[in-house]
Length: 383
Image 1 (cartoon, rainbow, N blue to C red):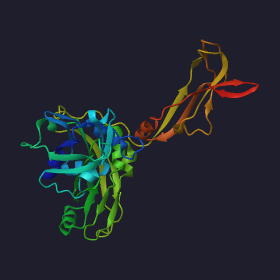
Image 2 (image 1 turned 30 degrees about the vertical axis):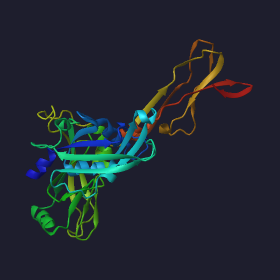
Image 3 (image 1 turned 45 degrees about the vertical axis):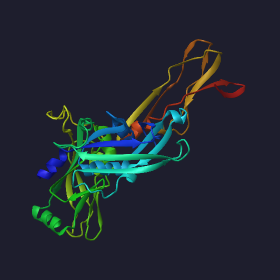
Image 4 (image 1 turned 90 degrees about the vertical axis):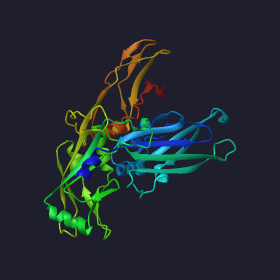
């Protein structure tokens, strides 16, 4: 119990150092929002700040979570997108990408509370085409006597989001037997821990309720039997769909050794991260909904002004979010040169079902408006 409490108050300091033959280094967001983990890559890039001091190409951040949870997240989701520039490059930056799965080993030993690793890459864009880029990585649980610089220990997030699973209908004796015989371990985002009455797991990088659903969907929660190698799924769909801080049931498939499924009361809560100004405060306000909801989006085009001609015009648009059978178009309006005219029949609303996270991602696509000239005796012309 004390160990579980310690894990929930842990933070991990991270330092990334890049050696690139004297080139200046910048950490970039992901090049495409369509990448599966683009949200987490962009957030991690924004949190990596210059370490300062003599380390010119060193970056740091400090994340809530245990060392296993943080490293597991990095291994599964993160890529370092780096821009290298220097006077010898003629002002044109070179770009290098390195996956954390290349820096870290999946079974990294974390017993000492710290780890260090590095990888060397070919920089084909360097002058002469034979440059090397070395990326070194150090991670350490924040403790009383750290080995990393003090700047690296400053918390990057004020809040930690924690998934809690409380086993129901399972006696302490049954749990002790499962642990003694070693036939059940709980796996969340690739991090395994023994079955117990209460299991908690930090949702790494999550610091708002709008991010909770995606983090839960990506946990790949299951129980594993180390002796037989069998995987027993753990269904969190009720919690994901609930959209509330309150409990929801999470049920496994049948556990062969027990002859029945396991049931957990599952919940997510937000707590202040250790070492932040919020550490002595209670987190306010229950969470807004994070499950799938019904939305209605309205678009009203009000007016148009032509600055080089007079014409009879209408406006048309289509957006993938609206699932239109055909593009929307206003009724025509006669627009005099350099005069504003109201667009008739220019209102439409669209109903859809989506999570808040999905809606925000899909709204990243801009709404493009097309202005058309129409005439009774000619084909419509796109202006």
